[in-house]
Length: 86
Image (cartoon, rainbow, N blue to C red; front, top):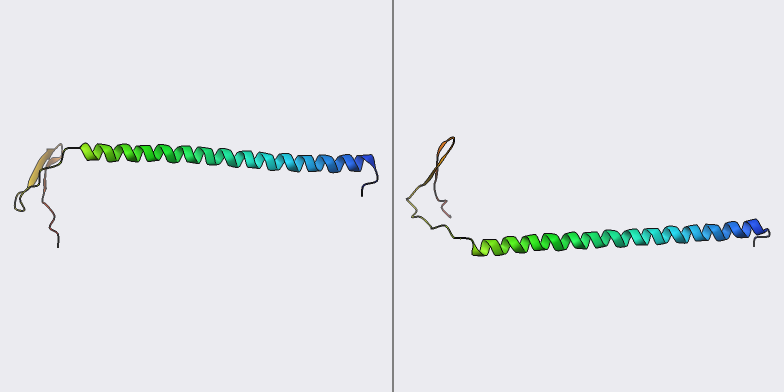
């Protein structure tokens, strides 16, 4: 048990500083989780928007297996064949 007034004040100050530090850690953790939740919501909305955009995107016409798909690029012509599923 503390016998001097300064030791009592020091113990009270030490307890207050520990409590304030714990409160700051809890507050920081709450902020971290709030920002993480907000980021998760934003990413979810981006994925949802992409899914909706792909849902309404025009579909490519499927070509016959023996027809080549060719397009002109600045480097020249690119010819693509359809992949066969085996």
